[in-house]
Length: 254
Image 1 (cartoon, helix red, strand yellow):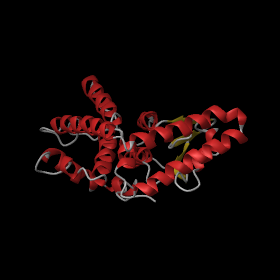
Image 2 (cartoon, rainbow, N blue to C red):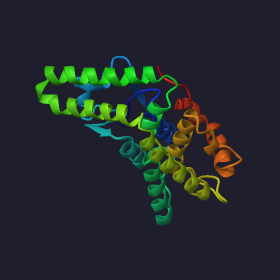
Image 3 (tube, rainbow, N blue to C red):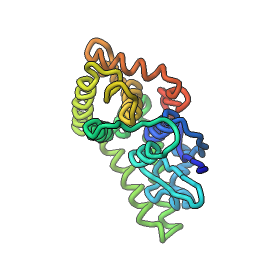
């Protein structure tokens, strides 16, 4: 029998996607919370040995040997591929292609930059990014063999600082997100779930996307007036036991 260990944070969108996949699949797993806000633990050398990008989540699959999977898009597919538990994959090739497209579409919505841009306290979100940059640059000097990784981490945070206050960039992100929402609404015509009558990975990722968009104040995108099918769908997804167990949280950090 194998074991699953997830390195994650309660408020991380990508962590939520993986936790929801694990709960819907019905697998036993253990978790290790990585402090990405105060201590910026994801930048520590021991964690970089697991995930060289210094981001969360990371999944460890252990049986006779240990396999480490990074990137939430890869992790949820790995979870779905495991033989135990409930199936999260469609049976037909057509639905499999549609699922792939819905997953890719959801991933094109830059929820991270929108979260930084619409944080109720720009000062707090600025401090989070500044702390990440500062620690990256300090560790780049302390660990020369990891210097480029740390410089890349610092550069990503610098870009986030720039883009979150770039009105035009945020507008483009919002336009792409809105177009994706329209497509998701259309997919629900005559369906209980995004692919039909069976819950799938597409529902995993879109439940989390809708949750974060609601938190960010895009309530018009999940209300019954403009998107009645999506609003009803989202209400039903929030009633699933997995939503609670996976800690799909609608609260601000910091």
